[in-house]
Image (cartoon, rainbow, N blue to C red):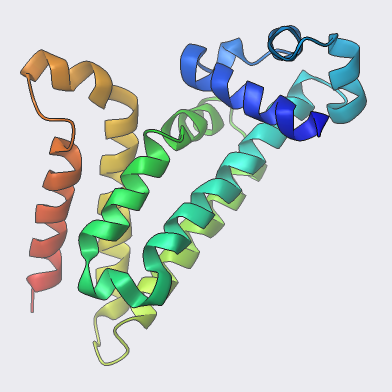
Length: 184
């Protein structure tokens, strides 16, 4: 399917070259088609970029939902943190989120915000007997999002400077999360 192939090529370009690399010409070259074919599917470069942002938000939601499957997070918080860090880092959600923010794409940012709110609601629902479940869930989501976002953007540059292990950011987020959840 040409649309799916174009979105995959656009994501690869975003991850390898940043938002400026996602052009109709570059995606067409990667696919071996003219940019007119892409205009047919997306209408414009902005349409392609918007479709990519939407796809990445959906992918982020699916990855996080998988981390919550069967209440696994209550037993294994590392599973959720790994899903969030993988989504922000390897899958490019940090690049996408930075792009949304810098491009002032508030409409697209709202779909991202929906993913964040849904995650907090689902986490709070895992502890129905905890009067502070909503507050704790918000703290967990904020910690995970801040740290995974930063790790996805600057981690690949910062870790080698410090000769730090690849999972340092995730491990620090887990420690902070454990401390937040242990508060009475």
